[in-house]
Length: 169
Image 1 (cartoon, helix red, strand yellow):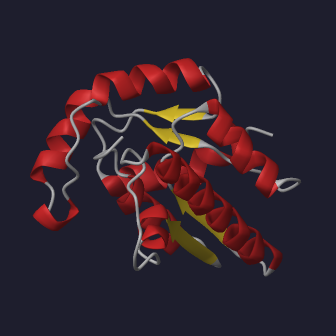
Image 2: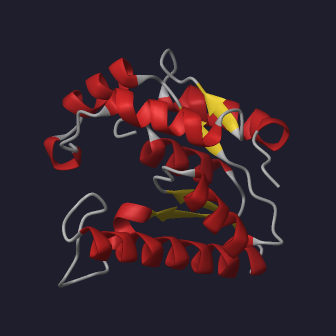
């Protein structure tokens, strides 16, 4: 969810690994100079096509980094089981750790409102998104409640526990 801490935490985790790359979905989307359609934008079929393109690009670059001995951290919204399966297929046979930062709607809403205006995301459908994600993923991956943690604490916990708690394949 917007404000969960994806960008901040993936950067902090990447900084602690000896060979790592942070692949940000937002940054990949900025590669489109003309014709960009936001994931929830119109026309919906073009938005869906661009989300698929984004996910293909993220996974292709992640695979290249893995093959070169780096650990890629993908910072992207994966809102359905179908999208996760798409990622897993594109990354196969490589191991994938799937972490859902889940501080809850109230915390995400507060963080999003108080972040730098340039990073603010106009969104207020947190409860529906949380419900959709819980339905889609259930107990898959690692649901990490970060509501009472700093980003540094979250990154440290991920580095320590993810290999044992976040496996999906």
